[in-house]
Amino acid sequence: MQIRRLEEAFGAKLLMRQGRGVALTANGEQLVSYARRLVRLNDEAWMRLTADDLEGELRFGVPADIVYPHVPYVLRQAREAYPRIKITLVSDVTLALKEQLDHGALDLILTTERRLEERGETLLEAPLQWVGKTGGTAHLRRPLPMALCNNCALKPDLLTALDSANIAWEIVAETDSDAAVDATVAADLAIKPVVGTYYGINQMPVPATSLPPLQPVQINLYSSEDALVTKLAELVRVAYAMSAEELDEAELVDRKVSGYR
Image (tube, rainbow, N blue to C red; front, side, top):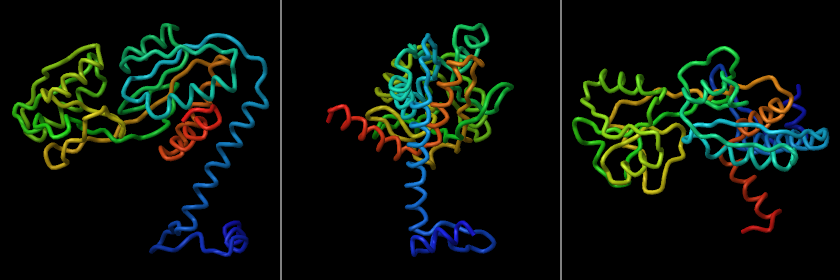
C-alpha cells in the first residue's frame, strides 16, 4: 500500500515484477538514491543537533587498504559534529589492531576478516582481488610472486586458493610497510591482494582469467562501550551505509561549502 501511494504521488511505476520477485524500475532506482541522501541528511542533523558538549580522546584503528573511501568521510563528520573530541587514526593489520583493542590501546577498530567474532558487527562484504602494475606481467610468472604485509589475516586463505588451483607461488616481499608492498608492485616484481575497489596509482586488477577468484571478505567493526566511542561508531555505520557514489558526492559538497575546488 505504501508503494502504491508513492507511485500515485509520483505518477510513475517504481517496482516491476520479475518471476516470483520484484525489481526497481529506473524511476525506482532514482527515488532510492534520493531517499538514501535524505536518510543521511536526517542522521547528520540528528547527531549534530542532539550532540552535547562531549570531549575527550579516541584512538581509531583501520587497516591501510580500507582507509578509503569511508574513513575520511567519518573523520570529517566527527570533526564537525564533535569538535571537542580528538581522534587519532592508527593504521595497522587486522591481527595487530585486535590485539591493541583487547589491551585497551585502541577504542574502536575496523577489520578485514573471513568471519565475525564476538562483540563485533559486519558493516560490509567487500570483494577481494589481486592487483598488479598497470600493463605488468608479474601475474603471469610462476612461481607467482606476491607482496604481503606481515601478519596478513587473509594470507592462509590466499595461499589455499592458489594451492587448490595448482599455482606455484612465492612471497617476494613480506613487510610491515604498505609503502614497501606498493613499491614492489610498482616495480612489477609482485602482485598484492586488495580489499574493495580502491588501489594505488598505476595499479590495476589482474585479469580474471589469470588467477582463481577470491572469496569476498567482511569489513567488521569492534569497539568498547564508552559513550564517546558509541558516537564515533554511529558515524562509521552511517558512512558504510552509503555507496561510493554518495561518498564522492558528499566530498564535492563539503569542498564547495569549505571554499575548496
